[in-house]
Image (tube, rainbow, N blue to C red):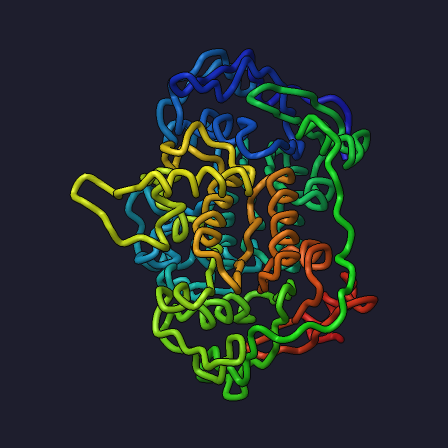
Length: 494
């Protein structure tokens, strides 16, 4: 992939950053070439986010030196970085939902007439094969289209450096492949692409070179062709990581949750029907628009009582709200971390949120029993936090997800609904969450798991249902549960 020696586009010399007593980066030095895709790999908390924020101008107070095409630079704002030719797409999107597609694509630029805005928007969207109404409000678009729109905006800015942080987290496989083609195109045109992904297949799909960070330090940089996936993982986590094979079939189990003709949309009169056995992990696979996520929210009562016949342990189940669902032993971890973790709340606040209502004007009131329970739960999920009183915003993405799981486990659920629980988290945290799911199932908890990662579903689940437009198109288990069959069922080729 690399074609000869190139002058460095970016150089980091002994870059360091601390947040109080916490050292996020400890003297990182690395060189990134022009016209290459350079993957930054590492667990959550390794320092990748801090490094990106320095490059993008979001953090201006740091030690060391940064060179862009040989010139020393230091950005005090994201706008300065953009003007210098560094475009960044963060995992959390920055589009303004109430504005149109056309307005978002020219946000922050000098006033341009509406006809020229529309023309520019159509040209930018066309370059990424994004078929949207340029006059539509961004908030009306599905998440995958918003993700592609954010990427299209960055690609239109003719950046010298394009930073992509988990850019495929909300994309289907065909959309991701389209993105990869454009990444290769801008790389071949001389743009430097810094790419972050926790999906191993994506790393090796796009990378020219890979730099590994661990505990804020630069561990190694290698050509992707010379670094095996096993060596990469070992460098990231500092140890050999146990691998989990497919779950062993444990025979038929009595249904704990029975769902019949659950309607997810007025256009789906037949609805969804399935049974979830006690101690079973049942996977949900679906492309954009499949309504697989809506299925979880319907069971949780997010929009009122489910439209269909649902039985929980043989008794009618029709929660009017999530609180009623929790009271009956059904808990949900949503895909949007901002909806499951109170960033300004402490670990204890978050972990006990679903079972408490007593709050004073000074904050949540916690008993000694609360603290003991949270301590126990934190050990159970291997939470890494400065203390039980640390705020959610101080935790890495993987630990925020573990915190959301702690909140659900505090309710001692019979049924656990997981909506893409490992999206955007590192391989170490992902492995720990997979282990926790298996442990819960062994203890008799029934798990309904939606994931955008097909390999995750195959590895963790007893059975996997394919959902398309609010209908179950196939249920695979045993020897049938492989990637080819699962993908075929999703696209309608099964």
